Image (cartoon, rainbow, N blue to C red; front, side, top):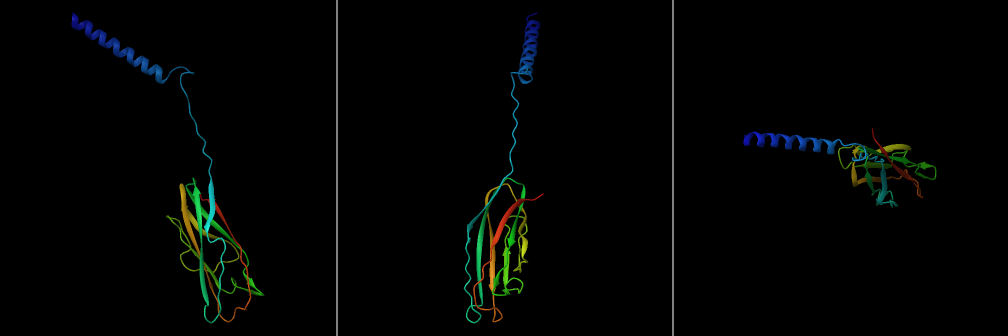
Length: 170
């Protein structure tokens, strides 16, 4: 008889415990909290070094010079690309880009695609890095430039402006 009371008491206790835990988990409104989060997408791009480049070349003793810019990216986008807007690079009437004297290349720090070989950019837009891994608290992208001249390039000074923009990739 004592066993029967003990078993009955244990069953009543288990049923009560399950009812209380079920009520706590699915309790009436006012006893639970629903949490939502909306995270905005951001891409921050800055120039870490190389925001001013000076080439000093001459066709006889120093026909080629190189320089670099290091870009710094932070983003919560899953993938991103960096686009460069290339202006004109002219000395007098001589266009260094159209005449194949100015080159550019870049490295993608992850699985994205950079510009592997020295490439003469066209005036307008060029993708410096395509479909790079995002979700980064900070990574560097190196962009290299090369000016290679000969006696066909007139003496003088030219200026080029390159504007970089980071965009989320789909």
